[in-house]
Length: 109
Image 1: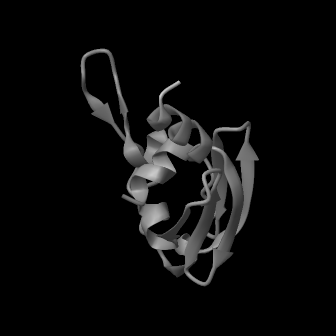
Image 2: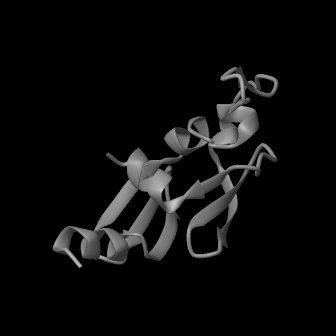
């Protein structure tokens, strides 16, 4: 296994997650830390309703547009999904987005 592959696999393990103020703090298996503003997380929601879904013809379909309010950027709870994602339950009752670890790492770059 190459060194780069080992670091990538180790980093994909989420050791800890906490909401601190208006950011989500993530500590990865390789010891690195990441801080993502909650507003960035909510606006980047990867669910089909928010981000859309492409059909076989290449057309993007999204749900109805929602007005985001202050509670839209508040986290009520977070639930791990397997060993690969987090499901975030937002203050505006939205909770269908699964934030994969790979997706979260990409938000921090």
